[in-house]
Length: 566
Ligand SMILES: [Zn+2]
Image 1 (cartoon, rainbow, N blue to C red):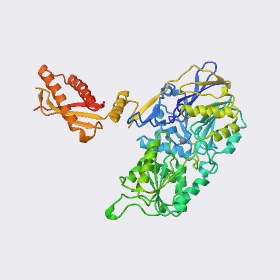
Image 2 (cartoon, rainbow, N blue to C red):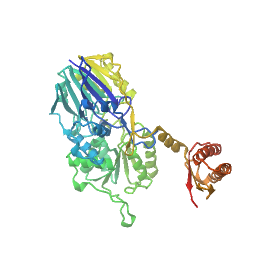
Image 3 (cartoon, rainbow, N blue to C red):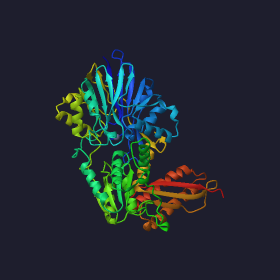
């Protein structure tokens, strides 16, 4: 009999940054016997975090207890599950266990970061494997998701099974490489199941379709039409990309893929045998060259435009405006949006459709109504719970509303409300001898901001500045001055960016030149030794005040004195 703690360092009340911890403790002494890490992902920031590339979970708890960490298990190769693993491996030397495909994606991340593969202990497992960590054994089963070889992780404790069940669905009509092992789940369901931690992202969806027959028919009809067809697809949805490729080849067409991320994952798919594309059917596009008559617009061409979040939409807009170097969309093309909107990209998606209409190209929007989500909806969750019959359910992965709707689905299915545990990041639930016990512990959590290759060193002030510049614009003033004898060498050079239209800026600029000159001359007249730091601060105040009066805007002001000796 034991004490088992479960908590999240990320993933609860948010979309991404999944990092869950299962901790086994001695019931008498409360000493930690072992820590198992379930996924370690990143999150993409909202637009308010200007310029920040990604967010990672705060792993100070793991660093503090690094000697107790027994293993890291990864469910699948999406960035929301594996994008933060390298940060942990920097400080904790421990084995990472995942499917063949997931480890392949992780290996690429390690190589891309300029690190040495041989420094890491990466283990490829499959659902036949059972791992032993002292008293605890761990096994896996395959699940259908949009990336190959997604798995759920099953930890066998003396108080019953603990099933970590992130992104999945019971999509049965899928390619065999993406299939859920229903038989194995049924076998596990014969044993006592202490707790299931299952995803909540799809809990607000209702999958109106159980398979892709309607989707196949829609795509086939489009491919039968004459002319070039351009699809948008999310790069992480490899199963979708695979489907478009399969149908295109069956329709005797050739395929080109645009988008580095998808190209990489497609190459990985071909390398590992997950994607089968005859080389003659895969086209690599050349830059548009009117002199050579190259427009990449062969009638048999299917172009798949891929990327995550905003990317596919952004690229299609660029193609519509003839700003892209590979594809110019024209009225003979058929544009198929096969990337249903996600939270945060609705506006850019709508604008993209406008651009396509302006060109006069044919347009088809593949909606969620005919496209099955690769996340568990209420029916998938009901099915999992009715097979596993868990004592406790902990909804994971998702914003607060997803977690609460997930809870309601469980209550509607007849689960005792007290046994459905809603947690926040850092909040701990303890199971002692298989019974839920309240815990006062709250583990430190939070976002670690990643900007380029810098991790965790971006101050709120930097973000504030970026926000100011994005919303209010920028005023940059350069002035040449000989600081030794305080002689002004040039008039202030004033540059306005994003404050007012260039055409109406001359009056504002000449006024600002006056303001700066007045202040500088005043300081020079008054003081033998001019404090240029003080002068800079004073100028920022007076320039900001003046520009607010004239334009009602509050831009970021940067003053730069260029020191000219003579
Ligand atoms: Zn996923």
